[in-house]
Length: 220
Image (cartoon, rainbow, N blue to C red; front, side):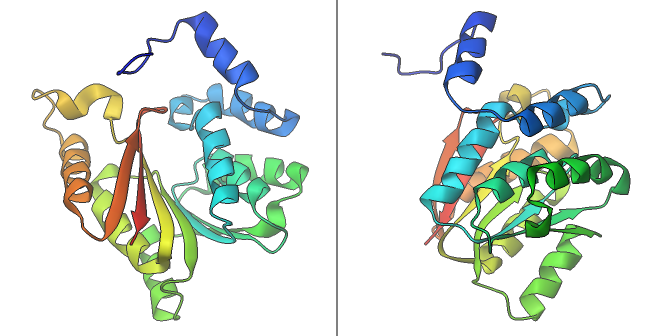
């Protein structure tokens, strides 16, 4: 037993991925195609995707929103875990990256559950609030431009029902959050939001050492 995180050898990491979750041909194909891209490291990991899928099942999610879709892996794993009447609102600004994911959504038979909206996510979220959809979402996933994380977080809390979950990716930022020499805008934004959520009495919080760090905040 260890009080801290394990150091993963290549062998142990392979065991985790091969034994710790079930994979599909579609998920594997999307991961592999994305990994070939210059920005492929932006994709969430296999184990994070499997965790998020099971989280959807645990909270009986039906209505979700994600900020930052990239090549569609997170939308695919979430949509696959939702019931037939489930809905993912996928917010992104890139037609190029999301176009890659759309073919895999079709192959997996979940394209009908995903509503891709190509415009700034703050505008989409504001429109949803204005249309009376505040308090109706079960889950929100934030994985986009870090300088806007706080804006996405605040809107997500408005959209979520009581007991709904907001998940925020990259909260450890490859260790930069504890590196005093890193004072760029993105790093400072992540540090500020991490502390804000820690102190936020509106939520119960848990930061997980999965991928590049994943915070779960449950709306009280």
